[in-house]
Image 1 (cartoon, rainbow, N blue to C red):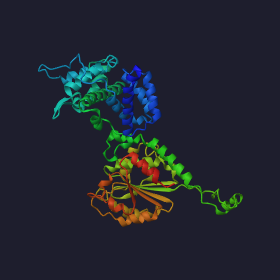
Image 2: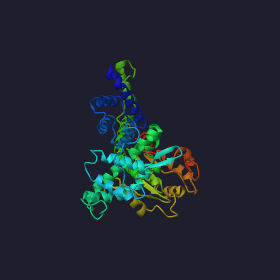
Image 3: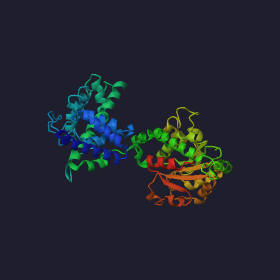
Image 4: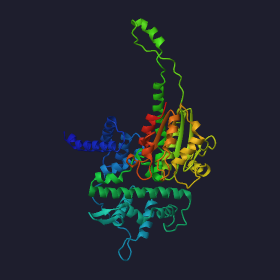
Length: 475
């Protein structure tokens, strides 16, 4: 009974942690929770590394969710409340201030020592860096900033000093340790200390403000929930890693829809003939032999400015689904539209395109295709005029039209009537807009006008995009 009383609070805490994972968008089923509860029975709960790995192994199905999981784990299972007890203080100047250069050298020497993690010296130094270099006074009292602490030690400069120390020289001797092997290892150690400082800062702020409030800004979004228009370089790299698993999921969904849709029309004569055995009641419907055919897909994408990242991601996803279509043609524009299908064909260049470096493919497309003939700003009206004049025949009753862009015309002519002509020619027509729906029609946005003649959908992140493509693309 006593063991049950002691275990109950931890199980309740574990259940709360799982609820938070679900609230963040991670799929954790009841069986995962049961496995996690069984795992903690045999894990040393005082060993946070074992506990973290055990819970990750039982609760996570997608390795791309690991960064968010780790931050939530640190909030729900902190090392200890309050400040750490530190024996060794940071080096100081004659004025009693922290000697930044000496601190950086001492940290580099410590990071070069493979035993630093096991004996706790690194954690102690990180705690002191946060205490002395990351502390500041806010309107609500004492607070801590990971950015302030990291700016002081300058991780980029730290890399060279760590490499020098690993090579056997003094951290200040930057000529030593220039070999790539030492530089790679030093980058990994610098990244580890950056993460340690962020964790320590987060731990202290959670003790001050509560984990719910800190979690609002400290826990990264899941890759599939990253907003396309605000994604930085690191976030875009995370987004690209979601393409293949997302494409496999969507391909299976499209295949199921295609099988269901291609059963064939009811064969009345065969059905009536079969109903003779049931007294003329057509219980068993007979269908004509289906004639499956894959639809064509025409994609027109805006590759200017901030929407280029959204277009690049969507084009990669569409190309990953190319086997679901008989033909995929891609047209791009900034102020003028041009076909760029060949530029994204990996058969032409194995290292560039959807099958290789998508970023290089986008750069080559912008530099070689005829996309700018005016002022270089998005011009949807001129794009529509050019597409109607040169490429309207590419749309057929078997094809689908997919337009990617924010519909911001830079106060040019929207030419909605031309869009209506394209919609009329295509069997299906959809517009995917990376802006939030409430911003449509504001400023220079013509989204509200275009939405009157074409089905327009908000696609601000990969989750929304997958839902739209999975439900709307023709089969």
